[in-house]
Length: 322
Image (tube, rainbow, N blue to C red; front, side, top):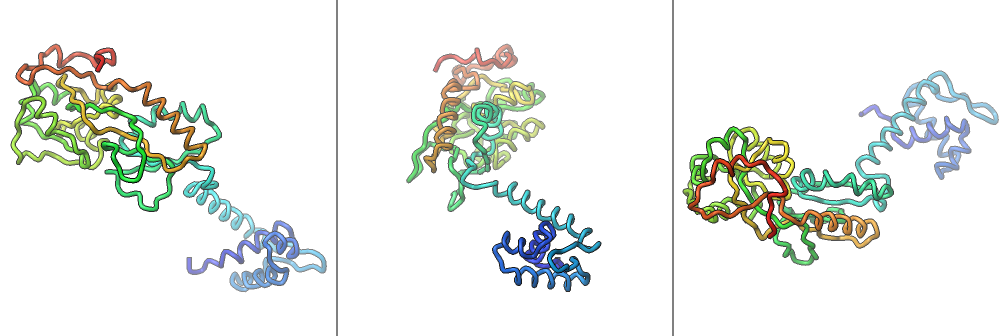
């Protein structure tokens, strides 16, 4: 890196080599012909070899110049591609959506092909968030975050109504006959959620010692993976557990699913046309999926979960009307 010539010199060489003219290069670069000629001379001194033949009315590339030109052009193309990849071709043309990572992977991603097919002219950028951390001056147009929807200074539109239900690996589920059996298991907690195991266990009529802290994860994705590997029992939120239940990596050992006040909300920070299009689409998707994903039954806490109920296959048709 210490031997790399200044980029201005390299750009002067690339443009001059394309035009084979310092005058034409000066016009493209908005410099004087003398300034371009000086930059080329400095580059040649830096490299220790001439890059051009100077003729009375034109230029010609030396063998060194011919060999060097494609290397320089490739470097500029890679730099331009990298800038476009990281920052986008034009920030004003890209719709940036910040989204809780678990919701992005489990809810938004499966539905996103429909939006892309319907709106091929809208370029999207997805950036992830954890725990609704302060956005500060971070640049994004829409924000999908989890909570009660009461955030100062913003308008939040609810996307999901959540239910929580224990989920675990099929092997571990065989050891769970009633909610009281959770006293002997590792409970997996997701940091940042206000409503969790305490609410579900209270509804199920189970008391667990406060010293049973279990295992803590900072995202639902991590909690689901840990549970799927048999390390404990996680709480599945209805908007995010559908795929895991369908694939069988996780199962719901008990039929009790408890509604919570929190949910995912859309926060709009931009009223541009692209943002309005995505807002209408995602709200429409949420309305179609308004029924809770997890089947929920509410047996009395003292009623054991029957073996038949434990092994009943997951089905959306099993969801009763709220």
